[in-house]
Length: 423
Image (cartoon, rainbow, N blue to C red; front, side, top):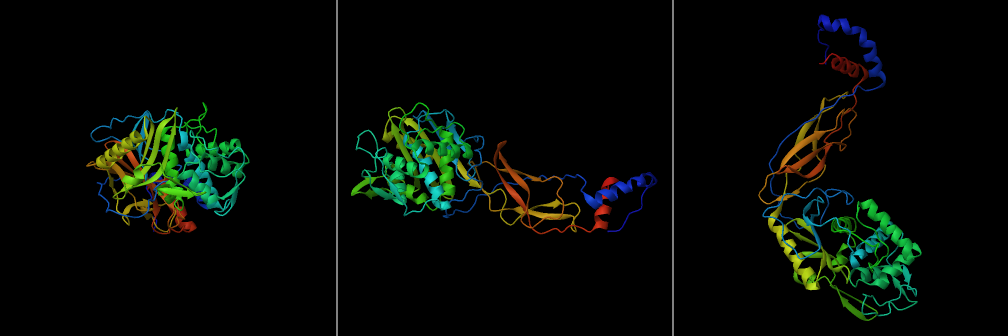
């Protein structure tokens, strides 16, 4: 780059060069740049890979999308349909009312066990003791794993007893093992709920047995289910197991859809007189995974029927779209004070969004303001925001496709001067 002749007006301002030199030597001049683009959506090819989230499980769910044909009328006090990949809520009713969750509570209990197993705090073969408090006396009013009093069971058996058999005894035993008491374990549950953004949830126990202060919402339970699927890939297949035998007692999974719909692979049932019959499920078809929450129906058959209806509505009215194909250079992002003036911006990973069937997707590209060298290959330098029918349906990071080294002192100085004079 060679200097350009200055006008008389610009020459009179050369007294400010000392400032430019000082800035070039020790700092950066604020500078911003942004780019916008628009694309049409393309449907992704069908895939049979394991689900992979495009955002952390703790990311908040998006605003409900516009629906095609209206929402279904479901016989439930609250319900919600969520797209797994984005966390977007596709439809809901009464989704934020705190309600008794019954044994859906045990999703948080099992999730904390799974976290401890992943981190090494627990091992599958660790032995868990069954105290008098945890022991299930065989009451017909509660679900049990039927752990003998003062016996010991492995952590992995306890986990299956919680997920498949919905054992209150298993839940209490692991709570005492991990936190010393069920009360202390509930504190861990609430801390995790807060981390995940479950804003209408408060746990008092590890089982879901009735308590006036023990509440959760359809939205919060969907957030929890999404976290389990995303974070507990090694243990998530347990949620699809149809039966588990322990202590010579074989019990079947109470999730009826596991026996009738091969696309359903979890998660949990719940029932108390106060909570009614509840069900959280997940189903994956043609590369799209949906999560459903049904709260307070009047029978086990009703919760299964309402879930089937909701899944059918979701898969019929929504589809996956790929706004930008992988390996596409989305824009050339302007870089200040580098050996190169721009750097190609590409998607961090493959990206798909869920939209009402037949609707197009528009995208807007946003580059970080004041992008300055050095820029490392793979560094996040912006994002793409997707909208459909005027509503945001997703976003994904943009990263630098190449390194941009910082320019030498003289070139940086000249760039400062050109900025100063509006070049």
